[in-house]
Image (cartoon, rainbow, N blue to C red; front, side, top):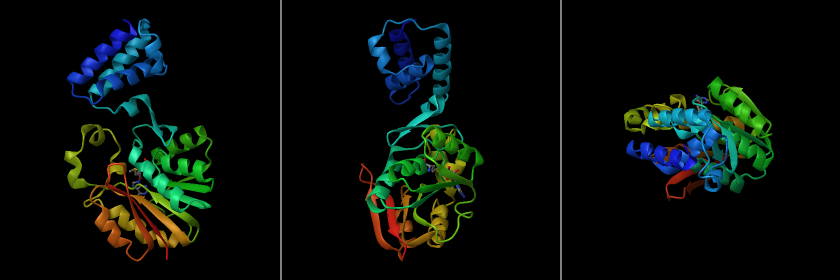
Length: 274
Ligand SMILES: C[S@@+](CC[C@H](N)C(=O)[O-])C[C@H]1O[C@@H](n2cnc3c(N)ncnc32)[C@H](O)[C@@H]1O
């Protein structure tokens, strides 16, 4: 079995099952099985697969056909130009969340102390540690997620303090210049409507905020003035349909800014503590 044939067969299987971007997915899974980069295939289309590579490829295709996201198979996802390890204990970092980083670089470049509430893989905390250079903390209620973040922090040489706690309950008052968060914001009622890749494979603690999806925003906005120094910034990712509710809850803050994503959807809210 050559690379070319393996890719053609994989693409066909994935396509028939209605998996998005079947050719690219086949390439990513075969590259993972052969422990090489995808570009290798273009130079070596006639290379024969070793038996072990073929077995791994078959297993990965099977897992993907069952709905497992490609990133949980390869255990990696790029975020802001860096590679993060992801496991089913953490949300797969999304490109939209990079807008939170951009907002932080725009309004709070000088932040000396940064807190990421609900850090998951550590994507935001680690990126901000490396981009801003300030002392950085991340919290998560899931010990397993915090362990993944710790591994990423070590791999990327980004010293980040990780704390397992409910939101920021273990964080001292008046101590941060910047809080970022991408909280779980999917309303429980929308569970059945989610893609199966998300609903059946990503951690529910990372997806669902409660009945309305606003619950964690409300708690973060209520607690943030305790943690932020005067003039400190709170920056949060906005879920679909959350803008009006979050805008109302931060009405008393200064310099409220709403930033859209590339599709023009309001994606990030930034506001400064009075
Ligand atoms: C939407 S994910 C975001 C993960 C990561 N920050 C990102 O943007 O890719 C939300 C994270 O919040 C964590 N979480 C949920 N409820 C929490 C709570 N009450 N306190 C702390 N963390 C919580 C979840 O475990 C999950 O890692």
